[in-house]
Image 1 (tube, rainbow, N blue to C red):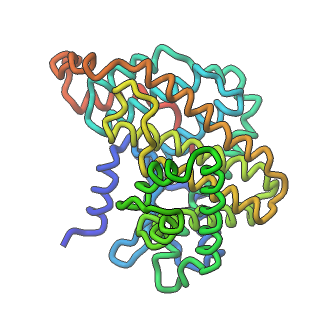
Image 2: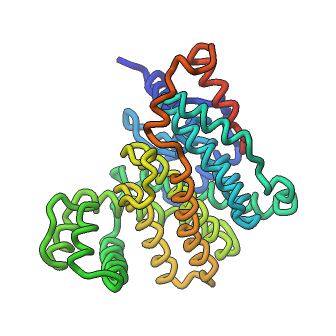
Image 3: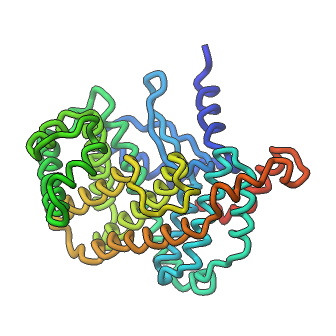
Length: 372
């Protein structure tokens, strides 16, 4: 039988490890604090720095684990610096090049990654000239994001065990109401027929004929049940954060920024996975994962609004910034060389070094900082 250590080592190896990362006492304390609130066992934390840039939670041989990937915090730090210093377009473009280049390393597409490493090196982050003035504010924002994301993953572990009663019926009903409210807003901008035709595929395999049939089928779909699971874990992360952090407006702004970043990351990954990235087409429909990510933010905002948590106007404004991000992403996609242009670059055109050394060089090029 394969040992637990070997299984976890393989999980980390598959994520493309950047460097070793020893445990963080602060993260240990956050996890312990959240587990006390949720009245659940403390999971073993697996620390890493990988290009996957995501936290995840799972059970292995009936024991809980959480993967804490500090590369996600590096990306959030850069993103927070950009938005706190005025959303400089060049800064955002440099971040795009980093995310694209690292994703290409994950996909073993080294020629294209090398191209984006050159684009990345030619730009400087303008926020580096002024970010010292905002260091404390950025640190507080990053701390809140860290807490929320850990709380979200612990929510998954909590739901998956026998000591949990599962998602409360009241939350299922609340989510249904939210979906109806958001649907009504969308139908106001298009016909009912167009809405059903363009949206049904995210939750369903068969196109319904009426809105009532659409709702009836969605509530029963496994995709919807998985979606509500994610929304409830967002809610758990929000509750845990607000119970331990003062100034709820700042916490909500931090969450909205984190989710906006994750939407950006998902946009890049889903476009590349669906082979849409190099077509110069910025108008294609969102992937399922991208669509669900945006919908999760909207559900969380309605949750905040329903609970009347302080003044959330600024949080709504921050969420609205994702449209500006989408425009920047669309402009960048149009600048990227076509598939035909990239097809002229072959492995033999790469620098004369072995694959591992080239990967290490590319990883080092895109490296920005270790965030503890």
